[in-house]
Image 1 (cartoon, one colour):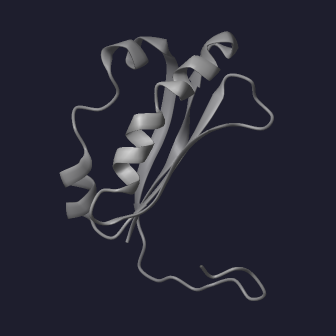
Image 2 (spheres, rainbow, N blue to C red; image 1 turned 180 degrees about the vertical axis):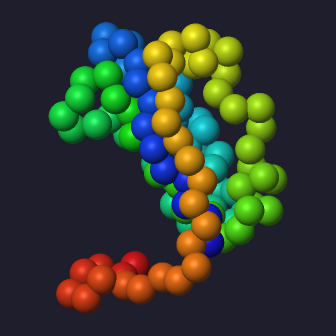
Image 3 (cartoon, helix red, strand yellow; image 1 turned 180 degrees about the horizontal axis):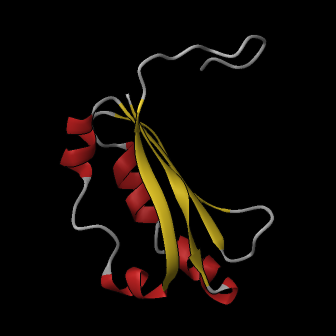
Length: 100
């Protein structure tokens, strides 16, 4: 399993329009082969932060889905980005939590 996680920052007044531009990407990702979860969301505390979380079956699934990255317009809106890919060796459900 591969997890892609991190955050990007945009000007607070641009966050909602940036997220609106991500809707089709999230829809495409969630229907892509090998995608287990995909979310691009507004941070609850920082008005300029957008959190990124993706969970994939394999590197091949990530590579197949990935295009050239954000559109030129989205790239221009980003002030910074800190997103990384993590290889997961083992998964354990949390006791008492939802395992779905």
